Length: 240
Image 1 (tube, rainbow, N blue to C red):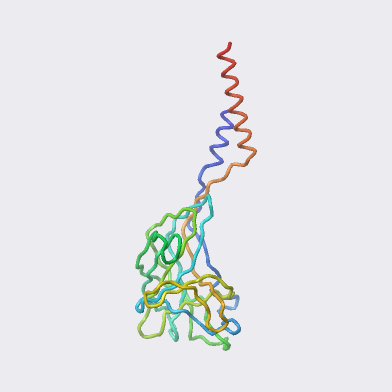
Image 2 (image 1 turned 90 degrees about the horizontal axis):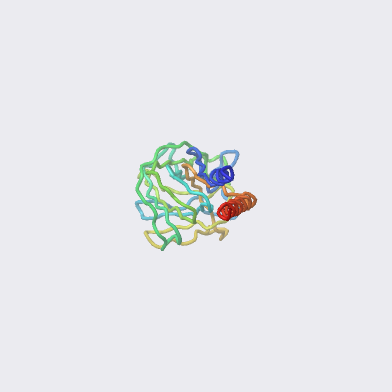
């Protein structure tokens, strides 16, 4: 009986992973280091300029039975004709529920560090190098999130010497539900003005995940039978 109880206890013990990539919302560039404008699309990047109160948003989910401790966030963008990293900070918030009316779980203005050149955003001229996409990493205070659906909203501060910051779509150009707020207005679904398709935006969430190993039905059944047997034995001892 003690062995059965120990088995059940072990089956619900939290398992913690090391700090690592928790979630990626999609590829930034393809295998050749390019983010190529999709056929009939005409938007190379969507505005996310803090100075103009423009922001973008996209969503992520944490599965039932899992929780995350987020330590840092990765954002991706470019400033046209900038040959080096130009980003200074990011305004971000994580919202539970609706992107506009949901509960703000956490928000901050965080300095960003250069995570490196990821590749180039290009149109028909795939040799162009005037839109270098850089990773901007924001180290944040550890943030605990349980299972649920969330939105990440953000805007970037860059150099006044170049246009942008601009956020490219994921390089596989799949449709999605990314949002944009213009001049501090409500977030609305992003649609490319050329092909009229919705888009997804790249970002990554880093930290550690904790999961509870779920007991199998057979283990629970055996445990239940063990409890019944123990109760029966106690009744027999009392009767004796």
